[in-house]
Image 1 (spheres, rainbow, N blue to C red):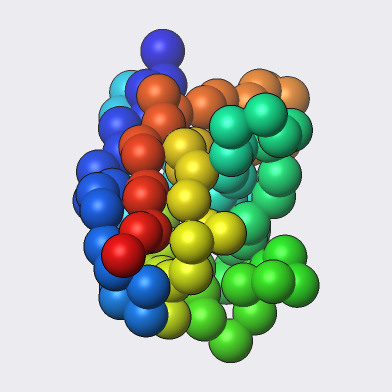
Image 2: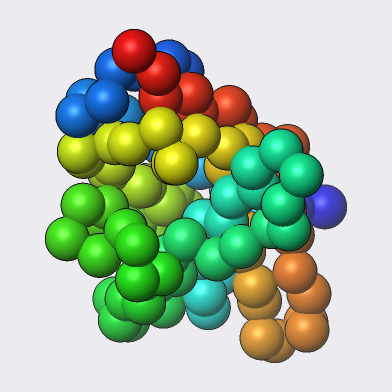
Length: 117
């Protein structure tokens, strides 16, 4: 069973930075697509960024130029570097992994990011 474990959340002031990590266990295969989603109170979960096994990336418009997604296939870990954080970035951030060979998708437990002065 694939498990995704996130780390790196916390509280920062506006303009600050955080780096989220998501480590996948229970698989020797790197996910075809890995990504980060977030859900703010009272809102639907939304895409933040995705990255394919080959390194192609996609970002939600509001985070372009501030967030960077990357992955280490050898470690089965995906990262989200978040710079210039704003209060509207406050949310629970979830890691996601999709495996095409098994048509399966997995989610992490979520990590809280709070941006406040």
